[in-house]
Image (cartoon, rainbow, N blue to C red; front, side, top):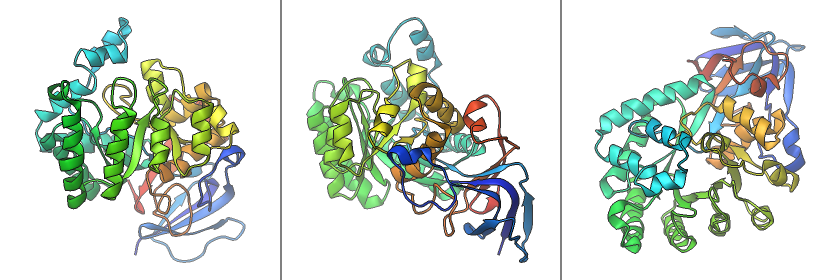
Length: 410
């Protein structure tokens, strides 16, 4: 069995913690200083202080003097399977068009859907695998990937088959989400209910039967799906064992947070428009508020009120929203920088949000999110750093020296 010893680490970050963190606890980040980590096979076997050195036989030794050992980032919201980029819409927005105006002209999600419908499944897989290679080099070790750029019976299934292949071939922990309710296809603009019928009567039962998805998602917001439509789609998904993860309140106070909590959503994501009523609703739930500052940055939206949520005692998670239209980046270190700069989060809060809390938000808390005995050995070693704050501070630097996934150096 492969046995890797990482020794002389300046600190083991998120050491030994197994539960989500909320409110004032998010400011606390356990770090075991001057420490070692033992990896056996694909698991974290043991940790300890260099004051009590490890002397048992190993197959590989990594010296981490002056460096931090982090658990891999957990990116709990992405649209990583897509066909082609959308830089022309980027230019349109520079010239003054809004995201909603572009969508009404047939751009945005509908643009991506048309391209994906015409793209071969193998080509989609190859492009998505290349993107996975990119994000794992920036420290991501667990990732959720949504469908939603298919918007037809065949194309949604094609996307989910691609995600299944990625699960089988990638070293990352991957969870799949069905997002057939991402936008209303052009063909159904005069008959919304027929498209919802397609989702709940045909696609959801088939996807559940074939095991193609772990979760069920809806874009519940102004100009997309209503609370009533969302309620129906989530109810049927729950009936078939697909727990909700929902897009909510990105563009308006849509009621998306409330309907997500009603159906025990694992997470409600975006949340740029969140007030006292939404926070009160979340306080009595097991739903993780997941914030996507990369999207607010790229679309020039106001940022979600992370400080207000945390000060009210809520947990928050961070994710990238990697997609071709509203956040063409999956680099989680930059997400942490945005969270600190524009949402008032401390470095410790941002790291908690991008590890343990985001692991919960994609249903992998038992496997990922911290460096704890028995968890999957997905972690990375930084270059020498003076403090943890350097991670979000040096947003343009490549601070990761070594990536280990499933107990193997990448």
